[in-house]
Image (cartoon, helix red, strand yellow):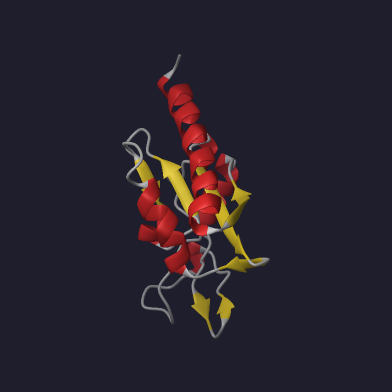
Amino acid sequence: MSALLEARILFTLWVGRLIVRASEVHGFQLIQGECLRGKQQVEWNASHCAAIVGGKRCEGVKSTHAAGGAHRFVPIGSGNSLHPDGLAVDLLIIKDGKILNDEASYRLLGEWWEKQFPGAAWGGHFRDPGHFSHGFGGRK
């Protein structure tokens, strides 16, 4: 069995445990945002800006951002995403029928997640609190 396949099996097992914990311990329901992502989407995310300017997303492309411009280029995602490998998932927390956007709720899950197995990483450390992944090949 390949190392990637073993990592994907472990990751899937722990995502299941995370979902059960969210429900039983915190009273949350979770829905899957994005799990598998193609390499083309990863490249697009890395080259498009996520900065909020004047209450709206910039939508600029990295190549058009001038040095010293109105704001810093903030990519939507990393070019090193684990989504194409099936080792990352974006989850949304539902409580009382509403999607929660507060980082504190995600932190409850993220801190638990990172203690479960070597390589477990939570996106709260890089502006993506709904992101949970299994490090692989030097990536988190």
